[in-house]
Structures are given as C-alpha cells and as structure tokens.
Image (cartoon, rainbow over all chains, first blue to last red; front, side, top):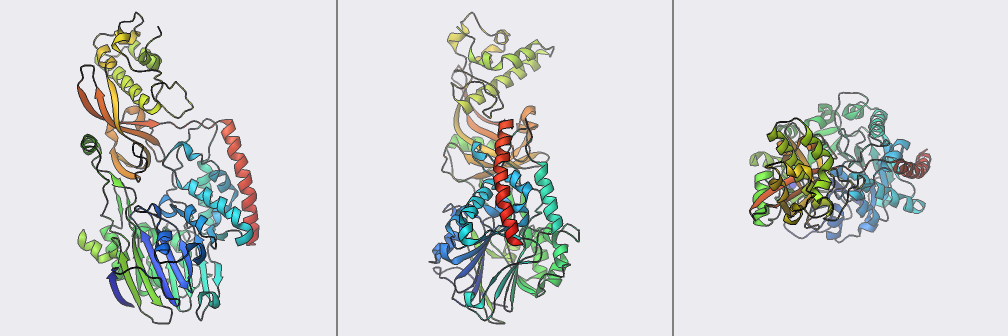
Length: 384
Length: 206
C-alpha cells in the first residue's frame, strides 16, 4: 500500500530508526540499491557513478543524509560483473570500513583467479569492470582479519542475519542470496576459461559477458516485510538456471515479497510470469532502472506495459529516452561531429533515484519520493 | 640524406601495392589510404616516435615530420612518390588534430557499433558514448570491430600545401600488444596468489 508519492522537494533527511528505506539509483547506465534495515544499519547492492559529483551515487546519497557511510553500511553486495553494476564499487568499499563484502561464489573459483589476473588495463583509458573487481579483492584481503572473508553468494543461501537488537526492531533480519545456481556458476567459469590469454594473442579490453550468469538475486526478510532485488538475472527456459531455478527451489524462503527491484532493467528476457505469481504479493511495488547504450534502450514500451499490468505502482529511476548530450566543443569540432556521428551523450547522466520508506510495522504504508528524473512508470509511457 | 619519413613508414606495403598489377586508380587510392593512415599514426605517437609493434599501435611507423618541399628535391625521393599524379597529393597533406578520443567498442550490430569514449583533449571531461557507422571504417579496421576493441578517434583539419583546409574525422583501431610468455607467466603468478586467497575464502564458508 502506498500512502503518498511525490517528487523530492525538501532537503534530505535520514530515515527514522524504525523506518525501512529502499533507494534505487539508476542514471541510465548503472544501477545501485541502498536498503535501511533500521537503527542506521544499511546494505548496499551494486554501485553506479553520479556524473555531477563523479562519485559513487549511493555513497554521495548517504553523505547527503548526514550519515557516516564508513560506519553505517554493513553489507556490500556485488551481484555480478557488469560495467553498469559495479562502477565506483571499489571506491565505496574502500570507504565502508564496517562492511562485509558479498560476491558471487563463482568469483572465488580458481578459474576466476586466472581471469582477474589478466587485466593489465593501464594501457587503455576506458577500463572494464575487471579493474574494479581487482581493487575490491585487494581491499577485502586487507580487511579480512578484522571483518572476515567475503561471503560467497549462491542459490538458497542465508548470507547474513542481523539480530532484532542490531536493527532495532522486534524481528531478526535475514539476507538471502537466491542465485547463482550451480549450473550458472559452471557456465560463467566456462566463459571465463574460453577468453583466457594465449601466447601471441592480442590483448583487448575484457568484454563483459553476454549472459548475466552469476547475477545474485537478494531476498531480505524483515519481520512481515519481504523484499526481492532481481539484479540482472535473466530467464533462460532452464529449470536449473535463471528465474525458473529460483521459483522452483524448495529451499528458499516462501514469504511473498511486497517490493521488487525488477530484474535486468525490465527487459523481457528478465521476465518470468511465475516470479510475479509465486514470489511476489499481488500488486507489489516495483522499481526498475533504465539501460541505455547505443541503440538499446530499456525498458521498451512493451516492457513498461507488461510490468504495469502486474504492478500498477511501478517506478523508474530515470526515463530511458532522456539522454544528456555532451557540452559543446569548438564549432568546427561540433560541425564535424554532427556530420560523422550525430551526437555524443554522457555515458552516465545524473543519477535519478526512487526512495520508498515505511514504518516496519505490519500494514504500514509506503511513501515514495522520486528525484533527478525518476518517476512513475506511467510517466515514461506518456512521454513516449 | 636518409629517405623521407613517409617512405620509411610505408615502404613495404606501398612498394607491394605499387608493384601490383592493379589499375592505376586503385593503386592511387590504396597509396593514398596508406599515407593517410600513416599521418594518423603520427598523431598517436608524436613526430619522433619509431616503429615498434609492442607499443600498441597497429598502424606502422612515421619517424619524422611529414614530407616537406625540401625533401622532395632530394635525389633519394622514395620510389612510390615518383608515381605520376600521386606524389603531390601524398606529400603535401598534414593533419592538425582539434579533438581526440580513445574509444572502446561495446556492442556491434550489422551496420554500426556503439562505443564508450574518453576525451583525450580534455581528460577531465566525463566519459561519453556514441553510435558509429561501420561504413566509415577502412576494410582493415572493419575486421577489428568487436566488443573490447580499442580505437582512436580524431577530428581535425587536413591541410594541403596550398593552404586549403579540409575538416576530417578519422578512426584508427589500435592493436594492444600481444601476450608474451613473460606476460602470461606474470599473470599466472598473480593468479596463484589469488587462488591461495580464494581457497581461504571458500574454506571459511564450510
């Protein structure tokens, strides 16, 4: 149930100690989520960069709330290795001294060790996510004696329990990973093995995997509240992989979720009807982030209509059609640019965000605020 | 006096092209293309750089400033420049770069590719993205267009000896250095240290 929705007009203030907050950031190329469990205990899932500040958007947001990110973030989840989910994550992790790292179990396999070691990317300016992951690993090693090793996410695994005392409520809070499945881990490692270097082969910037095989879906259970964060997990028509493997699992918590971060930017290949009928409440609140790259723009009109038909309260962190052109250069350069490429766009634009807040009591309504280009998904449809 | 730079840079391929039995027009076009790519290379390396297949540039070798009127009078004019009707076109063109980017290919479709761009002229600028048409690439570069490929994009002027200026936009794909045995050994060594760390992480989970 939603009490009110409104654009953000007043200055930012942190959630109350007994309030649950979910903030989804998505500037058009990138995605991150912050969840306040209560009592100033926060979880961050993935990372993206805010083009204005050039800083990780979630970290800047916590700063703007007047909080201490180094103290309040207790869990940092890397759901998968894709540029649009991990930009700035090493910088955030460096700062979050109290955060335990969560990575896909595939990242701690021997094959991935070989893969992550081949990233001599200093010779190109446009780096790939490999350097972010390497930096995260270095920080994790340095912090291991104090914080323990990273938690390895896989299907049906309770990765952390925050006691009721810690989150200041009447119930413990459980954080689960629902993926990747064993099959997905194997597929990812097979891909990793196939692109390893051989003598005489040309170096390239390591391309992102086409499939999101290791995407970690996170489930948070806090008393009566259940929240699902779909990362970029796709549906692949296989009962041992993708969304089907999660839906069919007997080992996952079965409480229906009231809030869903829609998977894979709302695209049809991240959709499975059974997720909406078997894992989510009827008419949940859905939040998604757009994806813009080249001529790909997600969600499409059909995607938006499909999501709205299942969740009339759906919000998007930025409008997919809104792209920011870059600042003007010399007139001669601009003219040639127009003739050759047309337009250039900022790779990342202002990080729009959707914030949901609710008291943690049963049946408490949600308040939704939007900022920086975020809005109701219907607004997107109207604008197209 | 040594042979002029353009000749140094293009000798092998230019000679091969010139000695081939192609119709004159095709030969001229190919030589012109070679010369232009040579000038583009100068932008990457600076005027004093030398041939080195390890430094990441696919296009080869320009070791000094472009062909100058003075060098034309030399008795050691490179043979392909003597080809009638070609030499003036090659010899008198220089390129002035106004704006440069380094790009990385993200996605490739049938007629175009998208790329993420770093502004080399204004390094503090945020990264950009753009969509490029494949038909603007040379055959040679076309074969290199795949996700992860790195290119240099230059917008500037080509300036003829007559002083006439023409705006140009050129894309040259780079070949990063090849993996050597030593690179692989170094990578393996680092992988071993990661494996030891990961083993600890995995055993902590059990």
